Length: 477
Image (spheres, one colour):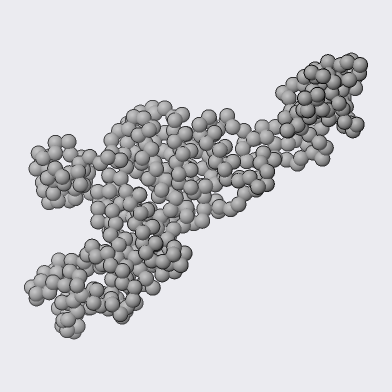
């Protein structure tokens, strides 16, 4: 087996900072009671703020410093969302609290073209989500976590070199209890290698058998089973904004990050979304829900982002927004979809769906509709409006034009021949339609295909009752 540990050293800070395209000075305090800087972002550090500093001193250096108490619950929730996102790389993902994921990647190497391409994809995508990550790679899960904790981005892929690589690591990477660490320091032990050179029996007696077992697990001498994370059936991700946002343009950066997270979630399941809901959390107001329906399920992040950009242009905020939540209530397997009479068989149905979705996002759901055939002989009643993507009915066996006029156009008649900028040449075959006697739409007509002097192919009819006038009813493509 081969394990990739993904360590997020700044997770406490990044859950508050990743929605900000231009981060301002920000720190996370130990908690609401302990007014001390736990971690500071780069902007705050540039101005002299350091971990361990009191908040009063930090504010003296940076008067407009943003401060958030550490939120361990939010950190774990984010780690679970990242575990679901990481499923795109492997189905075997474990959470190592509080700030680490473990991915068993040996079975994924062929799919991604080797370890180096896989590692770089993980690195690029986690950075795009707004997280700094340190990766450790080793044949055992515990060794991978120690490498990552130590900041050693090594790739140990075989057991033979594992012991030597671990020996150079500092004790701090092991996450020892304070008492264990102090005891070892008192014995002059500073590295993992120093520990490994101590007699096992004495080490177990003084510091506990668990420590010796940990060394055996790290070296692959003892099994180290890990529980794999089971992702939820639906996606729900939220992101706190850096301040109160008063226009929808200011939501786009944060929304794009949530969509990138969603993309990994969907890729892990081989699924797409037919619709999405964006919840806007207002300052001292009820939330606003904005929906986005798709013609065809998708997981293409940039396509979804383009649709949301169009959709949000039609949204007027009723109050400033302080947080957004993206929700996907239904997932569907992605598969090929056939075209229809709007496009030839070789046309790209995904391109057509993308166009329809952008039109709906820009113009509104009700402004873009589809057509479906109805079992009715009268041409003007043989169709109806439907939601885009609904069934189209069965095409009639008789010939029909692509374009039907909203109302038949009366034609001039000369010497018994219909006339439209010249005499119309009628095809010999006719289609007689007599229908609607039971309602208010009684029709009795003979339909012909006609050709105009200009070469247009038309659909005309002559009434069978009354003055027997000629009408133009449709135009062939």
